[in-house]
Amino acid sequence: MYLAEQIKKPLENYKSIDVFKVFISDVGLLCAKKGISFNDIMYENEEINDFKGGLAENYVNSQLIMSGHRTYFWHTARNAEVDFVTMINDNIIPIEVKSADNTKAKSLNVYIKSFKPEYSIKISKKNFSFDDGKKLYRYMPYSV
Image 1 (cartoon, rainbow, N blue to C red):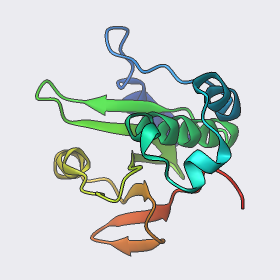
Image 2 (cartoon, rainbow, N blue to C red):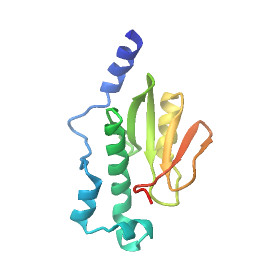
Image 3 (cartoon, helix red, strand yellow):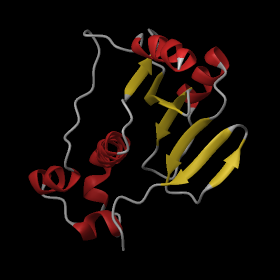
Image 4 (cartoon, rainbow, N blue to C red):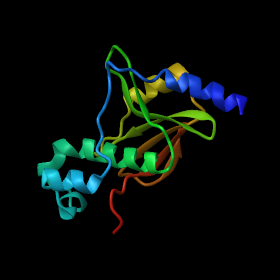
């Protein structure tokens, strides 16, 4: 229990009232508000390209919250940013979300070099794999 409390303390350092992200808890309502249909997402309507990243992050955030995780994000003064940082099994784990085919994660690599987490997670449209200390998950916003 002591170790978990110690880990929670460094995680609290990710809080900042000067820098924050806003998420909506219901991705379906978010899509309805933006006029995005199921087919727009499944068949990759190019009109929503500018919004796919935010939609993917909202989906991942809601899944993390529903799983009982507190979510934070990490950034540097030089504009490196990791979408989520959370505690999983007593480890602080960075999570990067990519909605496009380009899954390069320069900021995630900066985080890994700086903090050397046990592993990191990158969520994208690519199939699940484990590569170079990163767990890669396929992003599926809806069940088909």
